[in-house]
Image 1: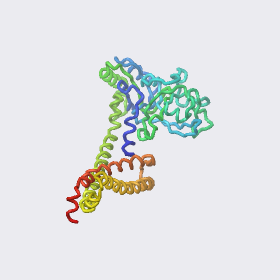
Image 2: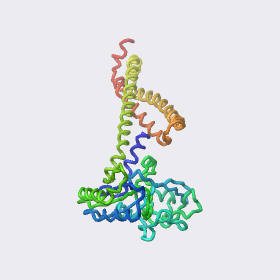
Image 3: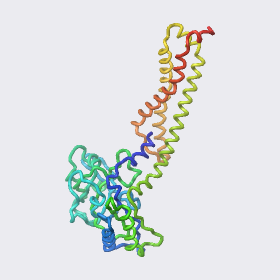
Image 4: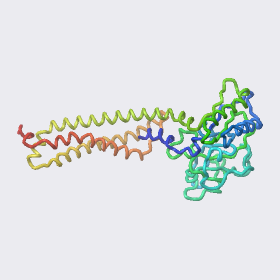
Length: 375
């Protein structure tokens, strides 16, 4: 259950962006090894001229783009230290289609180079979940948070809050950390990194805009791309489907294993209880002859099975917890939170009672005259 939920949690987390109408462009690596600020802006302008395009943002990091990942450290008044994914670029709030929950968008003069903020806090827009972790129930808007590695540094100033924004480190988007994400105003200048663009299009012109974006990229950058590099322009939902493909395969694997375990467990309990009923036919008959009702026989087998399965489940919970801790020393396994143990135990108890129900009903249906013939 725990491993399945870890695979499923990022897939269920809201993206926070206009997933249906967002095109992501990446893999634009320069043959010369470097792009200039003029190249960046020329590419953005070429994309803005494509029919159906509503907004374009050159960026250093984007959702569902895993070739460029920004991660900053943050610490607020709650003293919780967090590793936060960062989407940095120009006008990302509008282009990604993220509605503001509180505060404002970045001002024009707040867009600077990565190292453009040295003595003053860097403005950021964070998610509601991140604000809660950093400030608890207090209002985070306008507040300052620090970098745990540079506590004396300028830190960050929260100017806006959004409801959701899925991080692009999907392996860390578990245990309530899917929204540990923020937006950062970065002016894209000269860079040796491959270029990234976010493009939001008109819903009525999705496919037309996608073809136009691909042609514009090829026309603007095709001859200057590094040998063997092919630009990738595709919709967000296409990227997410590819990103979650391996997780879907893992879910099927876990489902198959879980189903096998459940079937074997149920068959084992049914077979063992059926054997007990057969061996205790005489005992059942004597109890029925002495006045035991059918419900008394049924309750007897259900209680006995609950005690046996309960003892096994209790032992299993201990072995699962300490076995997980031992395996973590040798393998890259996630820590099993104890909170998962009671639901797992309850599920196994219910399965055990379900498995014993049929043999117990057969035992309760045995008439005293048949059961006592051998007496």
